[in-house]
Length: 88
Image (cartoon, rainbow, N blue to C red; front, side, top):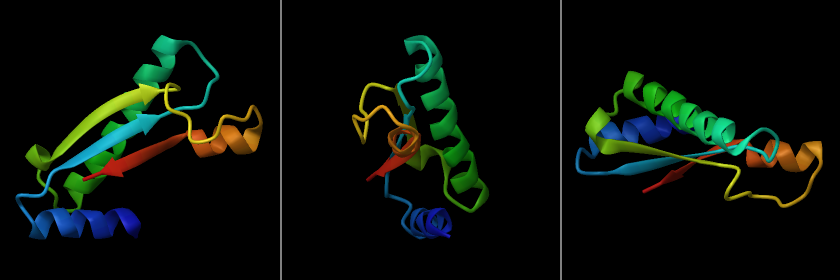
């Protein structure tokens, strides 16, 4: 529902711009994690567009493991680091 609300906002505000930042946990190679971060951000982009946002409003960027939300080395830390952040 949160992503749908963002899609509605974008659809009703055509001048709004959004950056989707894809993140991963620390496991895997740097190259793999960068690609996975890109894939995560692109999946959210496709969802938002399916819900009414325009493609030219949304940019994506994969950070991989470079900007962790939690610096721990446990499953709970890794879960927090696997995310897409929406930045207006």
